[in-house]
Length: 358
Image 1 (spheres, rainbow, N blue to C red):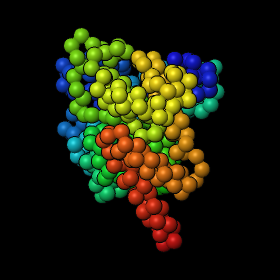
Image 2: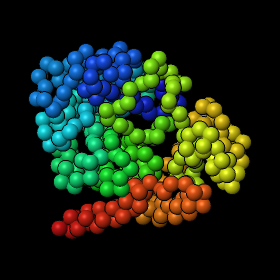
Image 3: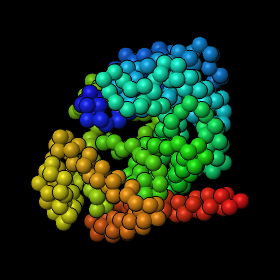
Image 4: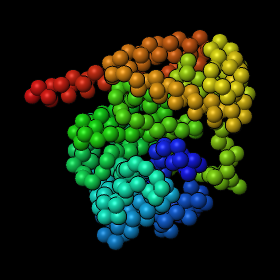
């Protein structure tokens, strides 16, 4: 899959999973494929317990970086962890890992094209930020200042964790992404914020990362069911929701309980993706994955076209329609992050304008 993407001149990101080293040694998310990666550490890592030893930090950063570049990544990300205290020693350890990775990336000419490939490779600093921290403006401003001062990186990879569908938290991730973009003049990517990632695109965030399983990150993660493995595509208890553009989200609950709503949605608003009958919802993993990939990409493109004010106007119209459709079908309300981003974005532009005039 990676080779095919590179052959098509597509970018490849293989974000590191060093946060898994924070889990107890017997946690299932530390087993399987992760345990075979160079960045795996047999002993549990607590980044908030004290400053990393120099040799430990250097080796962790090197192992994580080399694994990504060796696997074909065109954008490498730095090692990162989940923090209970944002301004504490744990975050300082992550900042150290970024600085070390930047030095290594330059020393090994990591920016050079991979053999037989075209294009410059890049290094993005990873920030894993809990939702409750993103909701605090002072914490966000501190993070912006700390990470904008870093040298030797090309952008930022923001990972949202434990967001709990809060509008305040989504507005905080917007402030973080746009603040880093403005102060550092580097692009930011925001991942794991759920369906409102579309609102972030409309508000001017350079890029977002969306996936198949709800696009969210919970820490600590749930244990895997007994007898399953993360590499198993049909692992128990991990169903895939069906995305529908008319409601800006998942088309009903998983399983038979949501079948009636899905049938009605696709009958009244057929899908032109080409991976299933337009008037009927996709069936089975293969069709759902193909449909979701098309639909999410189509919306991402629609929300990122043109200048921000025009994109936000388009977003506001889609929000009105999605709310109306959800009410009609008796579904839960639209994620509050959509409206929160619409309210926060003009405030940030006004703040930036005032700073420019000052």
